[in-house]
Amino acid sequence: MNKASTKVIIGLLAAFCVLSVHPSHAQLINYKSKDSLNGKPRISSFLIGRLKLNGIYDISGNLHGNSSFLIHENDVFGKDKPAFWVDMRQSQFRFASTTQLRNGKEIKAMLEGDFEGGPNRTSLFRLRHAWVKYAHFTLGQNWSTFGDPDLWPASLLDWDGPTGMVLSRRIQFNYRNKFNEKGRAGYELAIEQMEPRRLFDYTTNVDFGVDYAPRRIPDVIGALRYDYDNGGFLKVAGVYRNVAYDAKNLVAADQDFNYKTVSGWGLTGMANIFFNKKSGLVNNLQAQWNVGKGISDYFLAVGGSGLDGFANENRQGVLNLLDVHSGFVSYECFWTKKFHTMVIASYNHFSGAEATVNPWNRMTNYQFTLNLSYNILDNLIAGFEPQIGYKELKMDQDITKGKNAVRINFGVLYNF
Image (cartoon, rainbow, N blue to C red; front, top):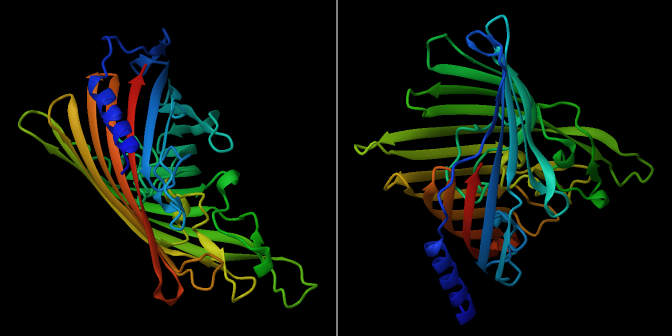
C-alpha cells in the first residue's frame, strides 16, 4: 500500500471518529382518516424518506463505478484501480397505505423508489417496490418468495448484500398462509417474473446460434416457513424456471431461429435466529445456503451479469445453464444500545462452463465484511465497513487465475 493510500485511509478513519450532529426529531408525514372501521381509522397512510450518503474508497481491485461490492466483476487480468467517491443515490421515498374493509380484513399497499436507475446508475429515480396485499394474497413487485425479506444483515452499508445471498425483487402473485390458525408453520406459493429490462440473464452469441427470446412461462416457487415467537424463523424454498432462447443450427445456412427452452431449478435454506442478552439487547445470527442451475438472477449482488447460462461453442444452437452453489453467514452483536458490530462471510461458485466463449470453466467468489455502526440518534446511524473479496477463475489445462479487492465503505443513514 502506498503513502497516498495510507493517508486517505487515516483521513477516513478520522472523519468517522469525529462525526457529530445536533439532536433532532424524526419527521414523518402521517395521515389517518377521521372515520373509523373495525376500531381503526378507515384509511391510514404515511410517507417516509431516507437519506443515505455512501462513501467508498477502493484500495485494490478494479470495482470503481459500482456502489456495491460486486466481487464477481473484479477483472482478474486487470490492474488495481484505487478510487474514492461519494454519492446519495440510495436515498429513498416510501409511501404506504392501509384501508379497512367491512368484512374485517384490510388492504395494504406500498410504493417505494430510490435514485439507482438509469444507465450506469446515474441518479435517475427507480421503482423498488410496488405492491398491494389482501388477506393472504400479494400482487405486484416485492421481494421474491425464493428468499425472504426478513433475512437481511441489518446495518449493512452495501445494500446489494452478500455475494452468495438469494434475494431479488420480482413482479409476482403470492399466496402465504399458515397450516393452522394458531400454528407457527406456514407455506407460500408464487409465480414470479423479472421485469423485462433484466429478464434475460444469460450470455448469447449469434455466431454460435443462440439469441434472446421472450419467456412464455413465469417462475414457479414454493416455500415452507416456521416462525419463532421472538421474530426468528427457518425457511426452505424451491424454484422451477423455464428459460427461453432462440436457437439456430448454423450448418443449415437457410434455417431460421427457432424458439427453444431449457429448464432451471433451485433450492434454498435459511435461518434467522435472535439471542437475548441479560442487558436486554438482542444479537442476531443469519445464514443461507443455495444450490441450483440457472438461478444467478435471484442473487441481488449477481443478477444481470449473464451468469444464468451461456451459448455452447461446440454445440451450435444450445444454451447451457450454469450450476451454482452459494451461501452466507452473518452475526450482529450489540455491545451497547447504540454501538453494534457485524461480521459476514459469503461465497458463490459457478461451474459447467466448458466449451464456452467465457475464458473460464469455474468461477468462485469470496466476500468478507466487517461493519461497525453507531446510532447517533434513533433515526440517524453512522457506519464504517471494510470489505475484502477474492475472485478465482479456473480455466482450461487446470490454469487458475485470481485477484483480490479491498474496499472501505463509510456512510450516514438518516430516516425522516
